[in-house]
Structures are given as structure tokens and as C-alpha cells.
Amino acid sequence: MDPADKQYRLLIGGEWVEGELGSVAVVNPATEAVVGHAPEASVAQSNAAAAAARAAFGSWSRTPAAERARLLGAVASRLAERAEALVPLIIAETGATAQVGSRMQVPVAIERFQRYAAAAAKDLSIPLPPQPVRATPLAPGGLIGALARRQPVGPVAAMSPYNFPLVNMAGKVAPALAVGCTVVMKPAAQDPLAVIELAEIFDEVGFPPGVVNLITSADPAPAAALTTTPDIDMVSFTGSTGVGQAIYAAGATTMKRLLLELGGKGAAVVLEDADLPAAVGALASTWGFHSGQICTAPTRAVVHASRHDELVEALLGASARLTIGDPTDMATVVGPVISATQRDRIESYIAAGEAEGATVALDGRRPAGLDTGFYVGPTLLTGCEASMSPVREEIFGPVITVVPFEGDDDVAAAIANSTSFGLYDYVFSADTARAFALSNQLRSGNVGINTAQRNHETPFGGFKMSGVGRDGGEFGLHAYTEMQSVVWPG
Image (cartoon, rainbow, N blue to C red):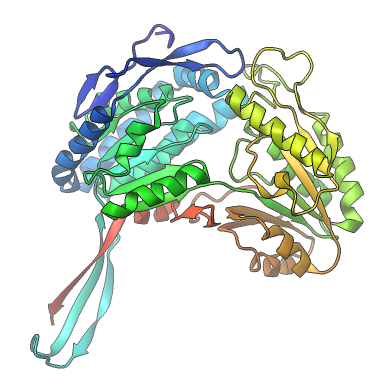
């Protein structure tokens, strides 16, 4: 069915219901046409979804691991069956290019469900050596055995961002469900349709009522309700630091467990002995990978002054090879950003950099021939200083700032650490031992040495204002559990 003709609903306690506040149009960022209409949940419906997750938690947490694994595997299989229809939907609602949509959206979501289906039966307990304990007024002495085991944290509110709605949601709910948690899914308001399709798959393959719930809303109030209700024990959120701060504060009264993956301002430290093509390839991903709408993007080139001009020239050359335009065309590398609001925000940072003294060596504002859609082309600001606003603040768009430095590696590290963010940094040097030593100085949750590639089994998260907690690989299982200590007499 054409998404424009489909009536999307909320999933609450196993029932598909219409949004009590009507529906909201989802707009294609490339064409500005309506892709479909998402239901608008009320606060009461949000609370009902949380209550349903709470009611289902006891039985789901006791469901045999083999059954949880079977259901998660069935989701992966059904996603694969529906990939041909889901990829165009994701491209339409996110503005992702055909290359990103077909390779990095649905296939990675499938991999994540497969990964955690296989992990559902894994025993996460940690056996501890017996400890001799003297008698106390509390109990007789003896050799006391112990075990540290992981219990599911409880009902989880999973809130995904607009850049990778399906993949990010899969990375939250798959490990949460695998360890025995129940979930309320709340996708970003800009592009929730693929996540609603995912909820349909959960229902189709036979997840019990209330184990997986879904609300969507453009109004922040229903999402905010999930951060305060006692029926939710944990909030897993990926998005802006500002919203993360609000969630942190709102969850305090009910001691919410938190997994917050927030903003980033990645520094690519390019030392004087760096392999320049490798550094340029990584930096250019800020332009060519989802139009810079990636929290891990290397948006700051912190380059030794001796390589500054060479790096800028190479980046300008790389930009000329990046086709901007229709995201459905496989030749397109740079598509639109998510909305007119985000386009205007990006343009305001470019203007601010210019006003603060940076040189706009490559200006991507309002690309020629693209009068429809929310486009910003590759942009390069050179001659920057660490104090400039486009260098310090997250732009979330195809903008690279170049900050030259002179001196030793400590100077480069100080510049890299000078923002309030610390999600993902990079070091480029022919001397890998030197790069490894420098990585230890970076206040960042992740560091890539001579590569922008990821290892998805590593713990992922940020230092400073980039968030709280870690997921990824087995750490994703740990994220949705609480430690419980059990002791007994030997």
C-alpha cells in the first residue's frame, strides 16, 4: 500500500488504535510532498502504553530465552521480506540517499535483530569466588558463595532520532527485548512511518500484547510523559543534548535508568605525518554520509599548520566529486537535510562562522538548481579558531571547519577537547604508536585511528555532554539490565 493512502495507528497493549489528537503529515525532505500521516498520540495514550509495558513485564521477563530469541529472529526475517518496500519509504521520509537507504538503513536493522536474537540465551551472570567471612551479630561465619547476575531493568521507553529511525530503534529494542524488558517505542516526529511498520512486524510475528508498544507524536508532551511516569524504569534516547538534559532532569524523581546518546562534534586530528588521502576520505564523510546528519561525523579538521593548505586543497577536490540532488538516484551522494528548520539552522552557523572571521572556502548554501527540498551542499570553513561557534557547537549538517595548530600533540589534543562534546574523535598519523598515545589524551567515548570505520561490538557512547551510558554489541545487553548480587553459605 502507498504510505500516503495508509492509515497508520498506535500500538498500545496489543491493540491498534488511532491517535486521539488526529494525525500529522510526514514530509519528504527532497520533494516537500506528503509521504503519509502519522497518528498523534495524547498524553493519556502515552501513559496507557507505559502501563501496558508495565503489565506485560512480569510474564515477558520470565519467558524462556529460546522463545525470546525465536521472536527476535522472526522480526529479522520479516524485515528482510519487507525490505523492498521499506527502503523507498525510509528514503522518502528521511531524505537518505539510495546508497545509504539500501545499505545502511534496513540491512543494518536486520543485522541488529539477528545479533540480539543470537544473544538472548547468553548467561550474563558473573560467578564470584567464595569469601571466608567471620561470624557477626548478623549471621554465622563461613565460606560465603556469591553470584553477580543481570536482571532486566524493566519497561523501557525507546526514543530514536530522525537520521536513522529504523536502525537506531532496532539497536535499542532488540537488546532490551532479548534480556527480558518490555518497550514503548517513540520515534522522532519527522519520520516515524518505518518504525510504525516495525511495530506491525512485532505484532505479526506474535509478540505478546504489551511487550512492544508504539506511540508517535509531534507534540513533545506524550514523550515527556514517558520520562516521568513510574511505569517506565528506563529511558533510552538518541538525539540532541538539550532534549537529553531535559530527560535527565525529568527522570530524577522516579530514578529512571538512562541511556543517553547525545550530540557530537568529532575532531579529526591530522598530524604532520598523516596519510592525507585517508584523512580526507574520513572528513569528506561529513558531506557524503547522510548530509552530515551523523553524530559521529568528523566535522572538525584539527590539522598541523604544515599540512593545512594541502588538506584544504584536497578537501575542495573531493567535494567536486560529490553529486548533490535527488536521493532516489543511485548516483547522488549528498541529499537533503531533514527539514527547512534544520536547513536554516545550518545556514545560520555558516553565517556565524563568516561573521566571526572564518573563510567560507566552499559555500553550500542553497545549491543551484535545487529550488524544491531542504538542501545544503558541502561547506568548508577555513582559517578557523577553536573559539568560533561553528567549531564548538554541533551543526548536524554537511559543514567542515578547519582549525590549524602548531606545536606538539598536546596542543592538538587541547583543541580537540575544547568543546563540551566528546562522542567520537579521530587521529591520523603514519606513526600508529604515536596516534595511539594521542588517543589516550582525547576526552571522547570513541577514537578512530587512521579510519572512520566502526566496530559495532565496541561500547558506544560519549564523554561530557555527549551522553550517559554505553550500548553496542554485548554492552547493549548490559545497558538494559540491573546488577543483582546473590549470596549463600558454602
